Structure formats: structure tokens, C-alpha cells
Image: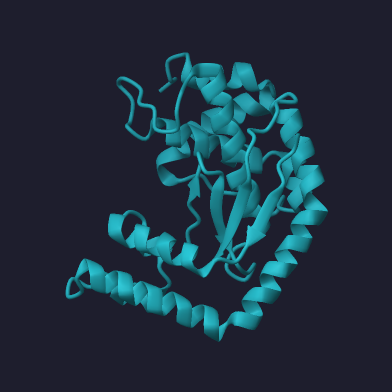
Length: 236
């Protein structure tokens, strides 16, 4: 059974999303718009930062209310016209595997990075395609949900599982690189009309990407493919 994905606007969720990034400090320069970088100033306390984030977020939503509503509505229509093809190719990739059950929710965001919560089946996406194409982000995060469900069932691995002798972020690298390989795979590109917009891997995933891309292009068997990365030694 395919997911019933809801794409919604929730200002409070976007506020908590921003507060989380600022609190943890990881990728925060990528996350915050340039005109809001000042919130990271050391002169603000933790509680002051949270207050500023809430005020800024609500102000942006108020100023751009019409544009945001219109853009999110357009994204809903575009996804409705695309989702059957997307789910069809995912069925092919994962050999008819059932999607994990649950309510899937995508939250529109005014910010510039789009985290997910695998267990809750929630994620964020850009409210407007002026920033980044929302469809690409939505599909990217949905791929993560079924990927992590697959490796949990197949290899008994949770999202944050560690590997002896590997980078602490090894599983994250594998998951992100897998997505990049799929996003640059011709049948997938044809769905999203991105064949002229190659998706670049994260810099720390470049080496894995070059190997993984060759493997997938040679044979599209998800079990054999992932075995090479989660069961066999990584070819350095």
C-alpha cells in the first residue's frame, strides 16, 4: 500500500525546526537565510535565540502569506501529478516492497535545509521552487523512509547504527549516496525532468558515490547492491 502523504503549512513546526538547528549548530550556516545569520551571535542567550527565531519565522510567514499559500498549493498539485510515477519506480527499485505504515507529513519551510524524522515519518520541504524544487526534496525524503525501513528489516540496522572501523556517519553516507545515485539514474531523472541537472553528492560522500554509481548502473538489484555496503568490506 502506497503512502498517503500530506503536505502542510505549520508555522510552529517550522519554528521548532529552526530552533533545533540553531541549538545544535550543525549545518546552521546552510540552514539560515543570509539576513538571519545574526541570530548566531554570541551576544544572545539560548532563550533569546529561541524568541528571536519565533518572531522572525512568524514575521516571514505573515509578510509572505499569499506567496507561501500559493506556492504550497502548487506543490501539492505537482506532487499529485507525479506521485504515481515516483511510487512506481520505487516499487521497481525495492522489488515491490511495502511502504512502512503510518501517516506521512511534509512541512513547508522558509528555511534552507530540510530535515526528516524517520520514526515519525515527517520531513520539511522548501515552500517555493524559487529556492529549490520542492518535488525533488519531497521525493528525496520519501526515499529515505523506505530505505531505512528496508535496512532495518533486512540487516536489523537502525538509522544511527555504527560500524566498527568506519566513519561514525558511515550509514548516513551510504543512505545519502544511495539517494544521489538514484536521483541521477535515467529512469528517475525522466520522472522529475532533471537529466540536465545532475545532483552532486555531499563532499564526504564523493568516493562512495563514484563506486556506488558504477555498481547500480551495472545491475539494479537492491539486495545485492546494499549487501556490498552493509555486509561486505568497503572497497577503499
